[in-house]
Image 1 (cartoon, rainbow, N blue to C red):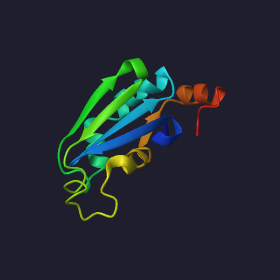
Image 2: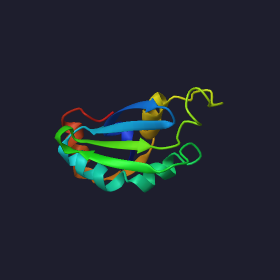
Image 3: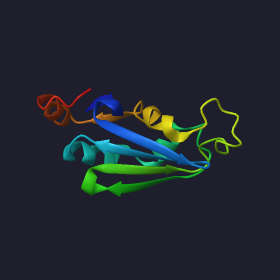
Image 4: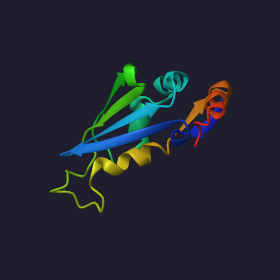
Length: 119
């Protein structure tokens, strides 16, 4: 297994509503999607955002687009109207998730490299 940042094997988008942030993590191929389903759990995402997300984290699988969607409750310091944070919007959290490190089998990385899909 090789430890890599999610940014090397996936892309993400995020948004916010009130005090909730949602982050969608898209795998670059179906093999990566299988790795993400194992490695990127609700507990790991909650731990990754410790100090920011004080509520629960929910995960939804969206296999038709090779994605995992995470909903982070109580993650924005109360939301844009009441937060004292410099960046209280959830739009920046997708980049933060991409810094999480995961274990990936070498053959999965080799396949991405063959197709020039590794960042």
